[in-house]
Image (tube, rainbow, N blue to C red; front, side, top):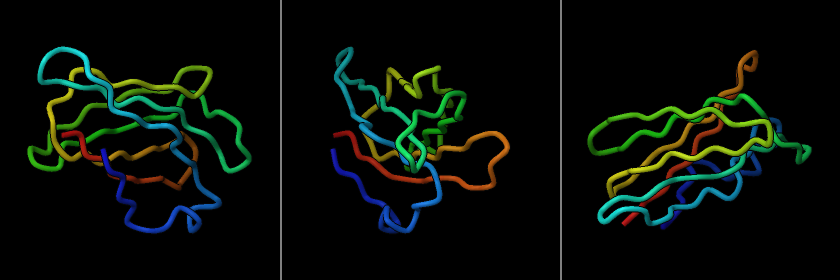
Amino acid sequence: MTYNSPRPLSRFSASLFLFAASVLAQTPGTGAIQGTVYDPSGRAVPKAHVAIENEATHLSRIAATNANGAFAVPLLAPGSYSLVVKVEGSKRRTRMRCRWL
């Protein structure tokens, strides 16, 4: 798995951070992306919306973070994905890319 950020994370100091996103094997041919969303001060962000889009097919899945800021999106096909995190009431979004082979 590789992460490619369109900009260095240091430029997003006032925005949200997606931490510990990982791809885990599940059933043959699928994986999952899971992680925890933190704000710049290191506190978990509950009720954030995490949109995960397959860059080849443009199919999207949306998850919400739980009270601890954690989310999981299971049963993903191999490919490159973009992740966008949005918190209700905030104008800022954090975007990152990952690739699951």
